[in-house]
Image (tube, rainbow, N blue to C red; front, side, top):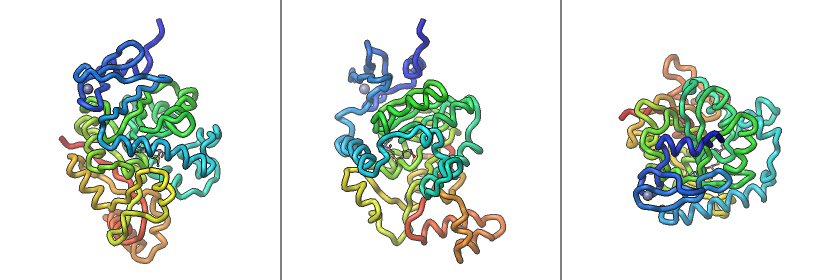
Length: 320
Ligand SMILES: C[S@@+](CC[C@H](N)C(=O)[O-])C[C@H]1O[C@@H](n2cnc3c(N)ncnc32)[C@H](O)[C@@H]1O
Ligand SMILES: [Zn+2]
């Protein structure tokens, strides 16, 4: 007998839900069907396609899917490189790169692995793109599920095949983080990397991350771009992305904290996404950092609220 695929296992355990009405999804021939509203969803190349035309904002999200592919082609990173993908996110550490964004992913993801990951957890990544998280979570004994709107074979969920060859099979689901197709409390740990800021409705996506996480489970948002309180929510550096239809927003740290609090999430750590090397060299943030006890929090708060554009990582626990 052929062993059930990771997606079939999710269906058998009753964890997949209709993105529109949240009733259970059941297998129907080669696809899936909703036991509530009767909608049907195809499964292509092993990936359930759970975007529905009735979802709010779907046109903007489909536009964004095309935008990522166009951006990758125009910036020369569309064709995958096995050596790079095998190192992600540790390209600075392992390949000698000096990339600020990957450095921030590296720092924030390491903290997640060290402090919140243990064998036996069921983990969901929202905005997983190529699914590089799999090569760190599966060898640590976790079940890993990847969700993204982007299903492209090179820069989206399709590239997950590369990681399946490295660490074994896992479920990949084309889904909208603002309408997650999972039952309540399905995961022990739900996280995203540089994804929340693409939500059309930030509060909605954070509530969805909280909903699909069990009580006392962990919700983390890593390396989200932030702005000082006096800066505009439209960062001029993101103009090329916006022109291609990618939904870019820059929220302040208080806006993220408010969205988490309203979703019933208790933020236990607020981290400067790239770590503290830069802040240590700044006059005020550096002095705050040296304060005994609350130095890291004071420095982060000051830098986030007063320095131009930066990035933050939040590690939270679902309370109720
Ligand atoms: C900046 S990329 C980060 C990708 C990946 N997390 C990484 O760090 O390599 C943002 C990702 O969020 C995805 N995304 C944007 N809006 C989304 C939504 N509403 N639901 C799920 N994923 C979304 C994009 O398709 C893209 O893959
Ligand atoms: Zn339904």
